[in-house]
Image (cartoon, rainbow, N blue to C red; front, side, top):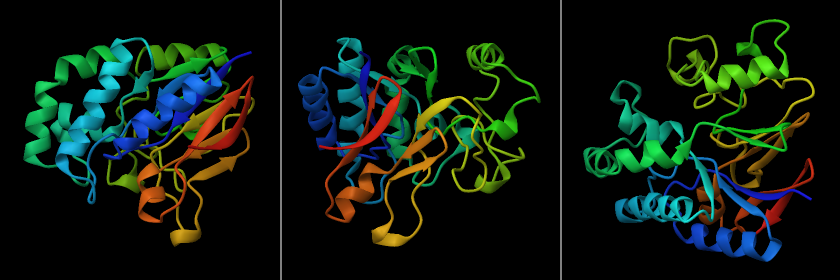
Length: 231
């Protein structure tokens, strides 16, 4: 049985790192973070840096896996700055650049049939008739990594796996289960950070749980089934 706990965008909610680790150990599940650990308008800059450092430590210890998000990438490629970008974080992320490139992944496969990325791989970016093998090869070649869609101020029709917008870019790929974060829910305090389209699940933003005084919610994957999990 394959089990994994997938944690949405943290944006400096450093306390969730330890809570998610405890949950993964309790459930005997792999722990995966989907990116966007920095650039919060509420958490301190020290908390944001600590979030990155703690996750890097867990990855290096073999206790978790982690993806790079568009906010981390924006400090490595300053032509793609995100909201919240600042010089202090740039200096800290530059210091961590080597560790980030070595330890943060662009995508993760679970059981060869479930794809985990930061923002989701939209069917709209694929060539017609693309097969699962085409998708796997394209991801390895970083074919859909850097596109920023019109919806997020970029110059591509839709965003790639760091920038795809759940509401304006994302379209499900038939037969492919996906789990990702990136897109904040709409609808105010009553909006759930856990949303579905077909076989795809968007789990974002953990920071909103804290702001709304709600339990931290992550995704639990068990043999192809994805459910909400409260920390």
